[in-house]
Image 1 (cartoon, rainbow, N blue to C red):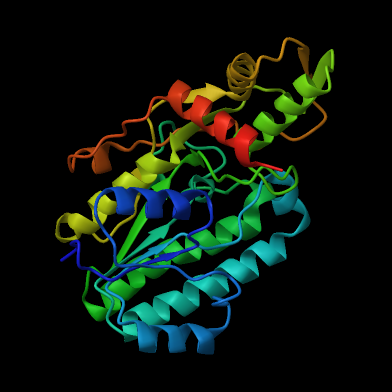
Image 2: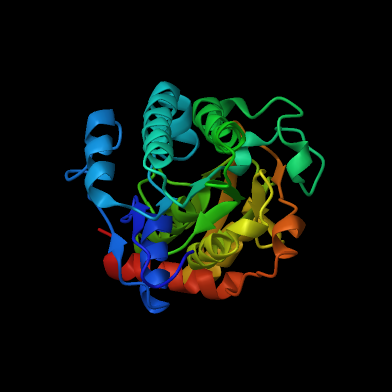
Length: 313
């Protein structure tokens, strides 16, 4: 049972979601938290991972580690996104099963849903159509992970593997590198830079019309802890997790401009790709278990921007 004495491994603890999990776990009184830096443990190395599990006697795992990025990274390095994520997932899944970890949470991605999909997207719409090509490598690895959770549970007769599919996560400790960041953090950096350099106008990729649903990192962390506590109530299926509200990229840019204080004109380069036009998840199955998000979009945006100004170089 998931409790204060449980030995909890947060894989990828320095990233956006991993750091939020460590923060929320500590605030909730969980002190037996294991973290390993990339230098301390190479998760693509199967032998190293097995030695770690042999010594660790781990009870629960939050698998936040992996290679993530935005449109540019996914388009230029699809093999890297596929290869590294598959290795990490396979190594940890195998060892979690072999050493009988009580529960592991794997995080899927909304990009595994069809590019053209009925909205909001229900779990049963998964794999019913072609996915967005720009994220093919990354999405394929995430699809393998979602299937992996179901397969291990089925073959070994357990509910050990839990899969949640959060929509676009944002928050403190995000990656603001323009090549590897997602749209939320990329726009914060671009718009803040435009303000600092007193640019009269700023050109952004695409039409600005695609719509995205965002959920704050600490809400995803809270939901993850809730899932661990209620693992006995879960079906052998992935669960969608979103805020329930989506915004166009234009609306997002306007909201960020307001928080940043940028007064210049925003223009759109329609020659650049838009990606999937709409990705809104139906999270009703998860919400019916008794959890709901707490952080309002405006508050999460302000907190994220404040962290960016204070911490990002």
